[in-house]
Image: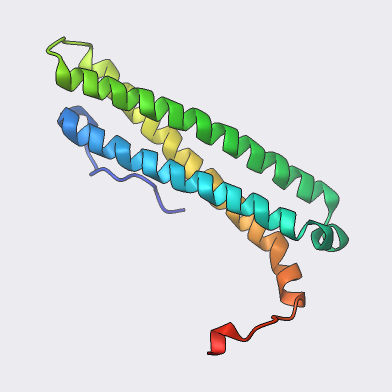
Length: 150
């Protein structure tokens, strides 16, 4: 899979300014918020076709997908909280001249990036699973409108 990393390679986290790290963290926050919307869409998609899916697919697969989506939603909330706390710490570092352990903070920044990257990969896998399950149902439904030919 494509890596989520949005920072240059090398020792960027160790050498970047606090402002640059803040901007990078903001990008992660926006990406996580988008993933939350995507999870909610997938939940609505499965719910909308649940009866048809139940007739065509294995109930255990549907239950497992529902559980995985709920877990991802919870994980997203925790990751958003961690990201917002992290951004607050960066603001504190910018506003004060207190010399916190910058190396430890930058290590935490790298860990947060890894968790965000892993989360984005999990949502991609969930999206693939949901689309795979719903594809057969959607293929059997005849479109009511010919919108794509207008």
